[in-house]
Length: 409
Image (cartoon, rainbow, N blue to C red; front, side):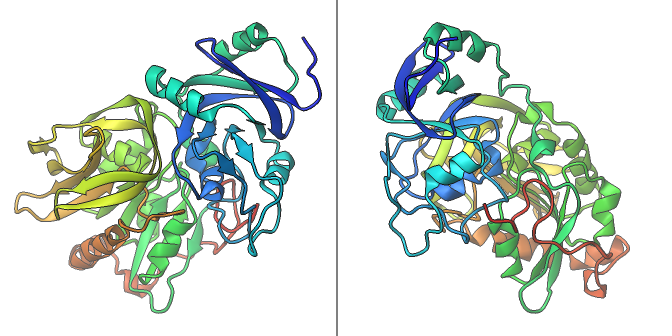
């Protein structure tokens, strides 16, 4: 192995293209899928989003770290990215909210990064060639040697990762004020702002591990079921799909986001596929076909649902239609399920309506979910419980497991 010069770092893509820069964050070596995020702000939320597990994130905005890290904005208990690539890192953070510099947190959590490279050229390369495996090293100077290890590393296609980022035990996020409804939320990599936004609407959220069963969902006496965002290939996931099919059969209202949208699609019988380079950032335009409005939305997905854009599809649970479409490339961004009378039963979107770090155009979807659950109150009682009578006792916690929202980084 060739030993590095002081502070030097090397990035090598699996197609052989290499970039030399300076070590940023922890020193060492890391591998993952190279993806780019187009947000000009919100890097703390990006870093702590569990959906980025096993991905090396390239920031297209050139100046990163200007506002440091604070204790209010993390979306989980830790930084999840496998590696971090920036062009011009801030030397000193400048924000009254900052508690520590970004590079110090990367070092403390063992996140290997690289700075000082042409991230525009790297982004254009990934747009042309597609997301691919990558390695970053501050201990290797030979690109050929690092390339060999990159090509031996794991691929994202076929990876089942939700259990690696999920909570290890259930916890409850209480409603703010009077509890109106109760939701069972399957943690596939949930972000902290999701149960927070539900709580603001009077919803008590029971966050369950990715391994939860339908019986465990029933035990929460929930008015609805929620599937969160998360990492990995939806085609490699089966357990959660069977849970969702069981819930749909019982008529439990459902709302899914991101990974939850992909699993909803597969539960309905649609296929999923890997996008060339994915959608990642907080500036993606989406058309809500149910309202005709265009929203600017936050995305982080490398897979998508393949479904007919202009035709309804019969399923064992009702009729499914595409409700949202990305205006950049016509990727399916949302699905609705309705019964024979046209009543909404379940829906999902491929983006982040919890909007951390923004924008907030899609917050109405949480209201739509509350309306769906409120309209199903009679059927909820017919399933053998009334959420107003109180949930089955579950540990209340703000900081359990791997990805729960309560711990600061």
